[in-house]
Image 1: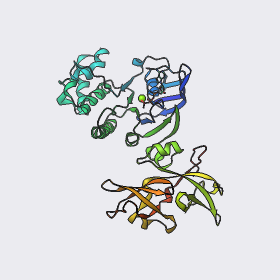
Image 2: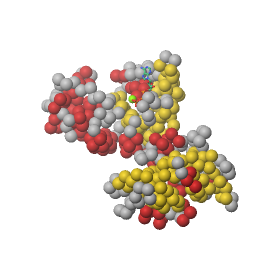
Image 3: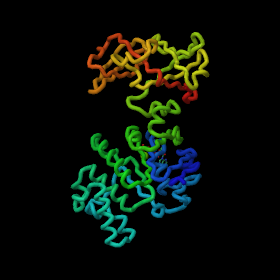
Image 4: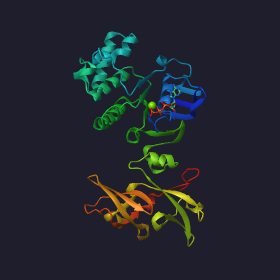
Length: 366
Ligand SMILES: Nc1ncnc2c1ncn2[C@@H]1O[C@H](COP(=O)(O)OP(=O)(O)OP(=O)(O)O)[C@@H](O)[C@H]1O
Ligand SMILES: [Mg+2]
């Protein structure tokens, strides 16, 4: 049985519908990340699960109980927000114990739970400090401590890391992952950061305008994006999306791209249905557009030429901005001898990783 079941949930504010019949089953101990651009309904969804927002129609279950009309404090959930909302005049220990005091738990039990949470979160040395005497990451951990001590059935996180700088964000990301491994609980986590989503999630739910676009493991949504939106949203740098035309030659479909580039479409599921003359959007991630040494691994007819624009060395690899016709695409190279801007360089497309989308429906077709 799923720990959290969301069935055909709709949310309207007045006449404006912002969540359109959402379905999601979150399993026991699963870490599910809701991701999508600003305004797509992530926080609204989380607040409806928490009970901070009514649902217009549909059903939400936590455990075996329909909670549509259950007060937030009786839903057995704990929520961590972007602004941690710690009480500035209380010590860390008192902040963490706040919910337990409110629930009138015996003092010894309160202390025991606070000690345990502090141990898990590495806050033992800081229990007597006040929030003003803590770093952003430490405050974040206190907010998580406050959630952990309540031993909830479900943790809800709404962009808990977005107030932190990039370095702290990535270390807290690891902390949250470790924490989940230690406390083994169900988590629904909201972010607009696809890196956070990829690294934390057992499954990712990609939302757009109040509609789920795809649900899958990080690798599934990365390797088999269901549509153009997911293809462009997941992965950094973004997947190259190139307008192209299918041309049959000797009975085999080929891809005509800008800049006079013409490469075969390797036979696989979907390739049989590609009619001659069909307009498609081709998708190739930057790591599958290569130059230099990596070319040697690709078949001869997967290669082409492009004009090098900007070269961005990143250390272990370099990004290449390549002009093909009037389009700019991003490629990668690992060589120390890089092409120079303006060069007409040999490039290769790793077509084993080619995606094709229908430009009208935006759905993946190959
Ligand atoms: N109280 C409200 N009244 C009217 N519209 C609202 C209200 N709260 C949210 N909305 C609208 O609902 C939509 C979804 O908002 P929500 O806060 O869920 O987005 P989000 O995905 O969390 O975005 P962000 O990444 O910016 O936090 C938005 O278009 C927003 O303007
Ligand atoms: Mg939000």
